[in-house]
Image (cartoon, rainbow, N blue to C red):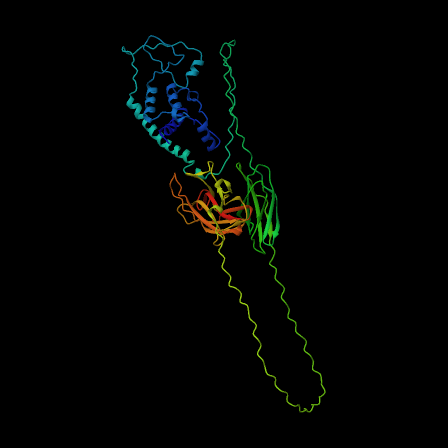
Length: 530
């Protein structure tokens, strides 16, 4: 931002004041902004023929596309305006000249009409005074005084326009959704017109050179809604969703889930060309509703038809029934004669010998094993940049202040979740203490409000849910209050080969480009592997 930017805005305002129209017009603000950067305004002399060539040249230089070609300071432009105002004006065509002191003053806007009308004999007006008529030149002080309000207003307008274009909409441009550029309407070649004079034998004027047509930008259409959405039970607590890609070139699919067919929550962003997703850890005996939407740089498709899926009811193991044993019915037993005891001589009592004790073996005490040490050289990392994620939101230049970033907003928006795929080489293991791996995030949380409730899942297993541990952003227009946070989780969640991590904003409220939001610059996953 420099004085040349402000003087550009002054030139735009002077162009409108002198011609009664804007230098650039379009069907939407994006088209107008594009024209300010790339298109040339129609020359002021063509739009307003009554404007002098000197003043038109001053306006044209102030509106030059290259800032180095504009006036460097307001004093330089003011000096040019004064010079243009004091420059001699060319004499209007068709006005007769005489030796008398009478001065003919043409009326601006009717000169062409009078030139086309039949010539009338000039009426000589006798002078009413002996001294010749002296034209009074305007004083520079009056000219300066009349331009001061214009310049002051122009500087204020320039400041606002400069802030608007530099920040893409007063600070909201960083959060504007990706949009493909609007196709510029091709410039049609002007039709050659012959100027017919009163004499029918007069030759037409030369045909003007045709203006080269601007090649229009081809904008691909938005993708169509996915079709044939189906839900198939993968296990009692998981469902596999499949769908067919619609017309267009989708880059990703947003999967949403609901338990009442009304309030849907975004649960996963699937990168195209994949058209399947397995939702796990469902509750038993519960009805779920799913829908899918396609996304591309051109925009989002409508949602697919909603599909319903119900998990089975929990099974109850059979209870064992106790059986009662039959009771025997007593029967009459005849009496038995009691025998008479016979006297038996006593038997000698043997001497008891104590048994020989058998020695018992004592098991050895196990020696405690030390977990294997893992060196830094055995640590493996997976680096995930913000553009490795699909879903969420990023602006046109992919940046927030001084870094690149990707946002996820609240559940009321279309940007609630983002996912990234990555590959684990070898059998993943954690550290020697607890088998833990580290997921380190670099990013921000919303500015000046309670922390954002987020959910982090790895391979559909929850590894973190709670307040965003990253620091709050500050109201510094040039630098973000970036920080880092570590999330520890069990290495058994990872698997050799393909993996996926998903970050979801769980806040039920909040709109697009407004807190509560989560912002990721990049992330690193550190683990050991065999």
